[in-house]
Image 1: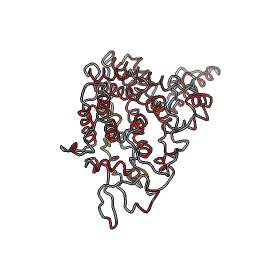
Image 2 (image 1 turned 135 degrees about the vertical axis):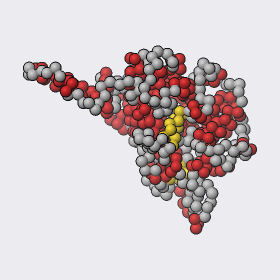
Image 3 (image 1 turned 90 degrees about the horizontal axis):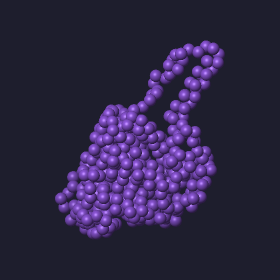
Image 4 (image 1 turned 180 degrees about the horizontal axis):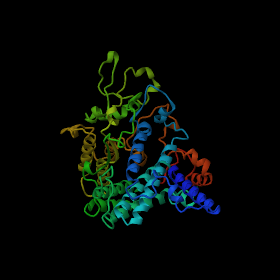
Amino acid sequence: MTFSRIGKNIRSISLISAAAATLAMGGCTKDFLETNSDPNRLESITPGTLLNPTIYGAATYGMSRSRSLTFELMQVAGGYPNENVEDQIYLYDFREDVGNGIWTTGYKWLANAREIEKSASKLGNNNYLAIALTLKAWMYSVLTDCFGDVPMSDALSGEDGKFFPTFDRQEDIYKTMLADLERADTIYGKGSTATYAADLLYANDFTKWRKFTNSLRLRLLLRSAGRMPENYVKMAEIVNNPGKHPIFTANTDAAVLQITGTVPNISPWNRPQDFSTFRSWFDFFIKNLNEVNDPRLKLFASVARGKDNANLGYKGLPINYMESPTSVDFTPSGLLQRLVIAPMIVPIMSFAEVEFIKAELAQRGKIASSAETHYQSGVKAAIEMWGGVMPANYFDAAAAKYDGTLERIMLQKYYALFFTDYQQWFEHRRTGFPVLPKTKFMFNNGVMPARMFYPTTVKIYNTENYKKAADRIGGDKLNVKVWWQQ
């Protein structure tokens, strides 16, 4: 339950109690409730009231955590030369509270999505109902893929007196999310056609919202296909019937939030230097881009500097630099602040990701189209999304050419998922790719964590249900695989 909802309940209880006391004393006035109302607080909402803050809040938080968590885990970038605790995540050193913010923020914005859903249902506005179902699937998928079993069926029910929700099994959560997305696909354009202020993502273009719904459905179908092989049939049906199930077909369709810099649509980094100071790109991230002369290098990174400030080109920090600190006798390529200065983008789900999903389906023989074609289209879309120009000879490089393997697809998908919340980590856990280098200084026996610890607040305030969930999954441990990883 969010603080805003708690505040709403407290206010309602206070008004009712005060009114009852006034009646008991015989001093009732018919205008009591009106005169004691807060003119600055919304008494009711439309489906559009909460939409923009929810999109902006969830997307920008995911982007910020991508920088502080996913970048480290997936050897994109990390702290250097400072050695504070946060900057050890790349060594798989997880603090117990690592997931606290993800949990709290996720349920905060889910509460908003639930209010949008309720309002849309009440008004019979299926376009906004479909959007609410899509937002819920997006945000629940992030939570469950971070933790495993999480509250869903009893969550967001504080107004009904359910303050200690039970944890749903991830399998059931996935079935619910996929059913909601399937339902959403069928109801766009039906019922009330009322629209509200233009939303930040698609400016009330419900055709594009529907493409997001089905593209997200592809992501979740693929992620759970190892447990539910029937998903491949459903994915083929979506891919092969774009008229019936529209999906992203260009970067202009993608769920990418455009940060304009105009209040309130501003960069989540008030101080751009906080994004880049004492941060370097890791060698793994840089060297693969170097091998193909990728145009994203100059968009993402500064050049490394050697003695006398010599230009060393693009050169990242080796993950094992702590084994021989003196070997790093240069300043590694750093993060460019331009990435977080408006105008800028916040990826939620890209067209490139959809193309790499298709490439994998074709590589696995699940659809008849060309894996190489989708692979190349995905690479091109990923480069252009960040403002790069696709070189005509890009695929002439041996390291860029499609070689028929899932590993090659996943390496380029890794770059396509750059700055997209935790998706690089999720996909690595699903496939094992890309293969990341290791160092003897890693914690957790050098094993990539399979999940996060449940938040400390949950352990304290929802102890009974926490214990049941932890026991069911095999313990609240980093290496306990979530359902779809089995």
